Figure 1 (cartoon, rainbow, N blue to C red):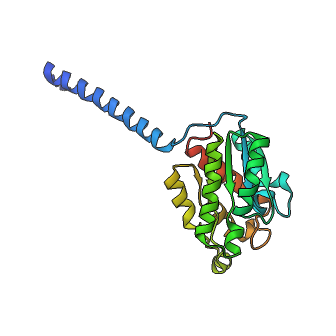
Figure 2 (figure 1 turned 180 degrees about the horizontal axis):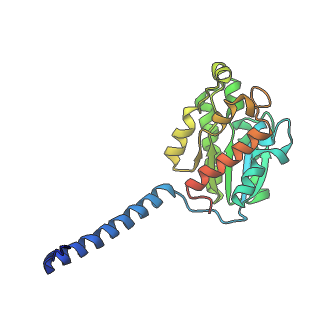
Length: 224
């Protein structure tokens, strides 16, 4: 025998209202999650993005066509201008940046600098001051600044596959509220199979940097 339970009209109405409330709550949570992951406005496909960096961006030992910026371009659809110079420092970046901005007129600039400064034992204060000068100049020109963290040059980390970003990159990113590409170079340069030598990525490492950088920028909302 089948039993059919009849629910009073008032309870039925309450259930329907509760179901609608749950739907609205779920939609709100999804919206909040999307807002949390998309922190910045997306750059359009074809946007010109300047990358100013050192030997890693220059594609040391491989050529600039094999640098991580090529993978970044294919992953994002952006027009990437590779302005990597082997041996460059943050002070060199300060000197080179204005002419590059005049020539290229980019909508965004990624800075990948600081590793050579640290290898030459420059003080963190001086490195931060140079990075801040570059970021301010990029913003003054109306472009979007993006910062890439560089690992601390630790001998033990190189040999034991455990590198970490210099902490001042995260501090700058948080203070200026700008996109930060963090923990990419540290992870790649800590893997012997992805390195050309102690300090530079090989071809696979360069591709990994480009893919990881694009993934982070996508999560931050910059890549459509």
